[in-house]
Image 1 (cartoon, rainbow, N blue to C red):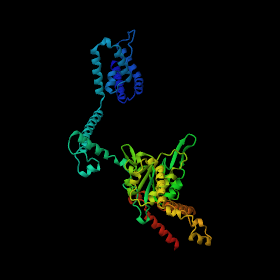
Image 2 (tube, rainbow, N blue to C red):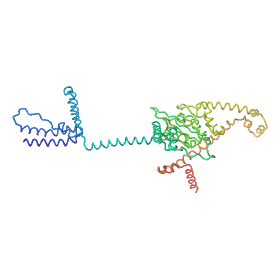
Image 3 (cartoon, one colour):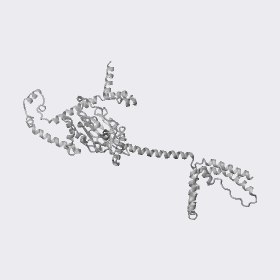
Image 4 (cartoon, rainbow, N blue to C red):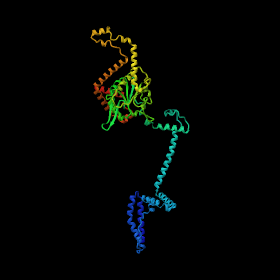
Length: 488
């Protein structure tokens, strides 16, 4: 009986040890204890029976899953650990320093026993990884802080003022310049030349006018009742249509293309006024500023004007900018009042607009100051041409012949006009003719645009990346071939 009880207890112990190695939670531990309880009771009862049946009070059975067995199996019971910590806290005053030292050494020994060969291998590999990363980081910092490879590199990274040498400040400055250059991909425009080459001189408009979109041409608001609403500034259609005969109009928005492209398409549905449209992807991000670099437009800066509402936008070329106050959506006439000044610049033999723009003390009030200058110029012209006014509205041979032919004399003997007035009358006449032509041929323009979308919308992404988008010459060639095929 003694042998059989011992064998059964040993069998239960080995079974529990095998299951305890796979224990991953306290709930599984309770399940193992419940499974082993019957075996434990049988083994204990038989063991007591061999010692004698005369015992009046049998000993209380104990679980074979003691702390030592759990530690050998590689499992620490959280409840037991919590009990240990609470009991050690209550008995700390009685047991003394020797007991606490013994408990700590025992727990550390159990933790060491809980590590397997796989754990040791992982820990070794992690240590090697940390060491190699640290050494590689030091080597990388040293390589980035080396002397300049050439003068071109120093100039390209704007580090011409940083000399070669291995003092801490020089090494740090070179490291900082090289590290910053690694992120220029995200801060530079998508292309070096944002616009294609200009047209030949005979077909080219005199100047380029760059306009921001938000809070200058349109204004967007959001409220809980209507959501997003976008308003078009009063006089915008006339502003774009009138100045498009003098300027190559480029809309340069500050928002992403996916948000602003549709707004630009609605402003110019026939593509008659706006030559090109650029968006946030074409901006340069530097020192926390969103900059519109006019030097990347592939146009002469002496004949380029930027009208914007944000100071950061023209920070690289402030001499080319006309600052405007942001439009808040309320009706005004600022765009129409700006036309005379822009028309004057485009119709005069101006080689560089920057000195003229910088001659205004307050560029934000350029409309009012130009009106004062025009008034002075008009008075000076009248003084210089008084003889023309003396002969006006007086009968002469011309008026006599006109009366014989039935022509009103008011149209023959008119008061002389200032050259600026003649230019504006001519510009207004050209604008009206173009609007009439546009309205008569609007359906035809929309039909041709739809055909172009069908023709070039089939271009694959691979062809678009490798060969680029079709240029105006390709589009004109295809249109000519299509027209010739229709005639045949």
